[in-house]
Image (cartoon, rainbow, N blue to C red; front, side, top):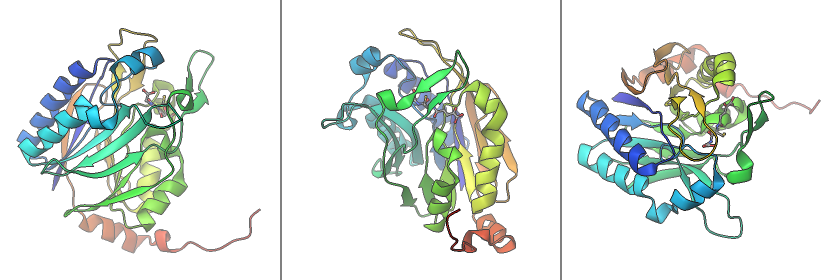
Length: 276
Ligand SMILES: O=C(O)CNC(=O)[C@H](CS)NC(=O)CCC(=O)C(=O)O
């Protein structure tokens, strides 16, 4: 199976983002990818709540979800929509940051709501309060496909080793890490975090990222780190897309998952211990 990473510079207009995303997915499929991945918030990069209220939709009406399900069906590919910002139902009116795995028939095979919220003061000028706009999920997800079992995570989740360990121990061969990482924390932490999660779990780690200066017309400008990456189950960097938007294709060899875990079976060596 060939995988294709799509690196985007989404703005705050879902219509424009959908067109750009479909174009790159089609390029990846044309180059042989049977499994294509897009970044976090593929449909809309925005921190302007009023704008989000105006353009975001609930899952049932979302144009990006409907459009990309058609794309997956037309191209006959597996598609990870890294995430969509969506309106939710119920008393908690915050948005969902939700990832979807789409089958080659356009069916939704799995969905996952980001669990860990990026509520962080990176510096005096760079502060994030994701939980002010988004409501966290509370359920980890491993999806079965004919080629692999796939563990879903989103962005800041990468800092929580226990989630990745739980996904791998539940059978995941591949961990997905769609992201919109901050340039500052990306330069300091992105690659070692991805490599650590691959080494600890013996999983492939596939990380499609947002990159660059986003075309945002409402509210605060936003930059992201880029560097979409693929990491082998042994921890090697197979792909680093640097800063440009576009696609990268790689071969997935699931035998390497078993081989890595045979060499270092740490995943099966948990021990009970008293809390400190
Ligand atoms: O707000 C949105 O549009 C969608 N959500 C995101 O972009 C999220 C929250 S701001 N970004 C991250 O989790 C970056 C994590 C990160 O950079 C780190 O862990 O260092």
